[in-house]
Length: 221
Image 1 (cartoon, rainbow, N blue to C red):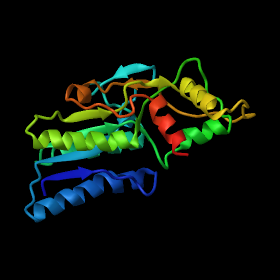
Image 2 (tube, helix red, strand yellow; image 1 turned 45 degrees about the vertical axis):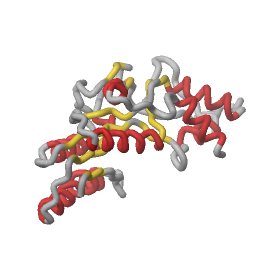
Image 3 (spheres, helix red, strand yellow; image 1 turned 180 degrees about the horizontal axis):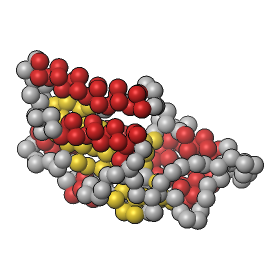
Image 4 (tube, rainbow, N blue to C red; image 1 turned 60 degrees about the horizontal axis):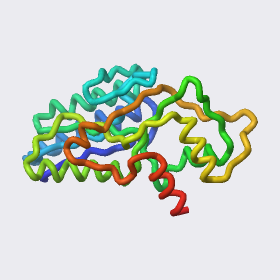
């Protein structure tokens, strides 16, 4: 094997499910590699920007403290350390909120007239599924060319945006004028993730902001 991309999702979104998917699963795969004499050139471990606990709209890059306190973040950090200490060169790819075909949660919320607070602005970060896959491919290709990779990259588009702005734009595109009686879009945290490190390597997102990405989704129906 030349490369391993470990990109898992838990079947159960509780502590046991996260541990099974990320820590136990990765340990099993790394054990298999060792047992079969496999030494990939690099492991890409797909992680999450949820490891960052910043909540006041701060800009976050790969050097920022990753100290979120929830069980999912703590287990993800444990899995990240397992990858970095595996004895195989490894890079973490911390993806932000993935949207795209089959991932239309926010579109449904906007159609139903859900409200979102505008003060203080709740900044969210997103990446189109195609760009998430594209970033992984870009990093593999760079490594294959002999480019020295960092141990961590954030996968995010160019424009973190307040959630009320995104919902307002979607409402306009969808022609939604009503507001739901009591329903609100709920989210925790507010931070702005930077893709400067990936961009410095030469990666360019196909969908630089939510506008291009959601416009493509709306065209596709």
